[in-house]
Image (cartoon, rainbow, N blue to C red; front, side, top):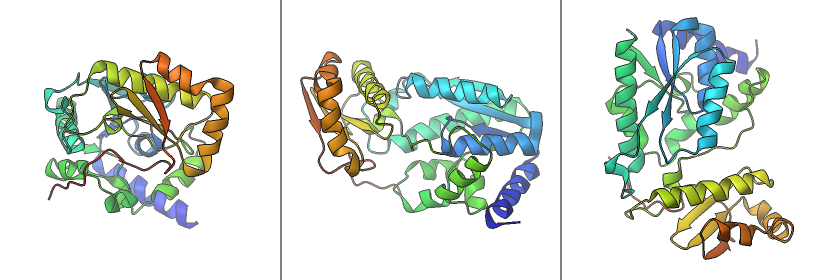
Length: 269
């Protein structure tokens, strides 16, 4: 048995030991493998729970529904609306959002006589700026990938072995991460960002962020894709298309994609 097989066996054991679990499910790389494993370990005692809110794109919500159906897992959608605590996009919006969301998932677990709520943080995440992890700890939410000491690459490698459609899916964060902090987030701004990113993904840029600065859209792609965006503008009219979505100016960040580039350097202790 190789290293990945051993780690997966450990993960299966961790999930089986719970006896039943609600899985926070976004349809991303991590949560899809977690749900796949939970289904194998727990059968019908695994419940997927996803979020419905304006700051999660419709395409991501749709993929989560589709993947849960393919795995034949009970799927609950939590309608969070747009909590007022997040409307001004505070620096710690991830902490606030996860506190609200996972409190609701704990209620779902209680309603189904389930003790555990699980989510897909991996050990690489622990070295990043992730204020939401504090909320998970406070609510005693378990992170099986951390318990099994799985890295992001190992999660991708195991997912590939199981032919999961997400094994090479780019990482994604909610649309609040595209907005400046301490500035009111409007439904129109969220719509503009979602439309712009969907367009850019469709023309060949799956790892893209459109940072929203009022009338200015700042496109971020990996540094080795910057020239491709310039070339694509000639073919697909990126500048004109984003202006159709309501932006007055369209810019390309020459520094390339940077995770959380609109975050302030703030921390929760």
